[in-house]
Image 1 (cartoon, rainbow, N blue to C red):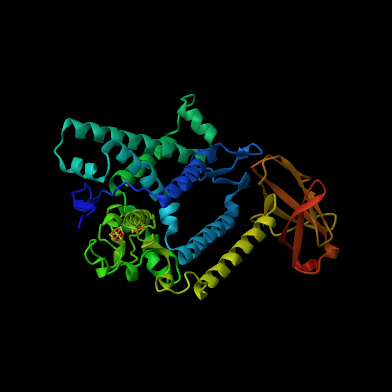
Image 2 (cartoon, rainbow, N blue to C red):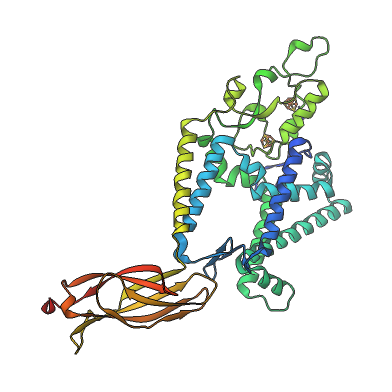
Length: 457
Ligand code: SF4
Ligand code: SF4
């Protein structure tokens, strides 16, 4: 049997380097289309604006995040946590239903590896056999030339991706400004670009499929998540076995698998799917394409390797909802409902009102009691706003500040003074609700306590 791997000492481990055969077929064409849209999204999103603001900006340095043109602050971290939870539960649910489809079709690691880096290798070094030959041969001018061109392209792509990622952090305008050398690039950005590019280059030129089969924890979770109802890339052993070369004299001697090993040769992680669902399988479907081509040639029905569940392989219903799927769906719905509630109830400002340190209260000559507070108002919008304050649930008044002007995406801080006639105070610690008003409309309400001396009760 032909093998897709030969032992070559890698710079980091003594592992077998894999030279997968160039994939082709219906599934590969579909993956190319999906990859095209995903790559287009990745490279174009930094240029997309909503009302003049970025579609997506994750500025961890300034702790400013813009998602779908909406600005989020560190105070909105709970929303980001919700989003992450939704993403993880969605991926888990997706895995329970469709196995590791995410890995083969949407994971950036597989997309860059199979659709960009591997394609460059096919272009420069040829198909699997030629690549293997080049690897085995001594350093000739041809090998030196091909390897240099290949690695130069790898470095160029790594730097390009690094700058694109940078534009997600600092914005496309700054990135273009720095790239065009119209402004000096700060050292943190320079460091980020080179560190990211170096890691990226290392992952795709050295680590390669090891990122999926050894490093990524998601692959290991597969064994826990996938069950007999999950749709996975599966070999139909009932139809395929006993495998064997075509025997024209007694064609009924063996199953449909002609043991051509093409499914192994195309596998980017170097496994044999005929041994059953394995952790290393990234569901790239290359083996399905390869086997379908063989089946077409020998006049057998396609689908000896196919997307199917264990139940389906056993001739039962291919897909059915099970308790685990229902439970994950329920959790996902719950999380999404919570997220949408938080988004809809999100205010344009975020106010923090705390008592001023050191002073409990002050008795004023006019008979009023006053309490001093520190107030901080975050303007989460892009436009400047002016806010005023009012006591909602008690008599008394806010004597300062009269109003606070806050420019867009910024924070204003001030001192707030509340006075209440001593005759209206019934307890030492009176709960107060303070309304934040913009253009006559209450946009937020915060709570605090008002302290008074016992002698005045
Ligand atoms: S490609 Fe199909 S026929 Fe060939 S070895 Fe694999 S399963 Fe068997
Ligand atoms: S077994 Fe098939 S689907 Fe899984 S990684 Fe290999 S080629 Fe891709």
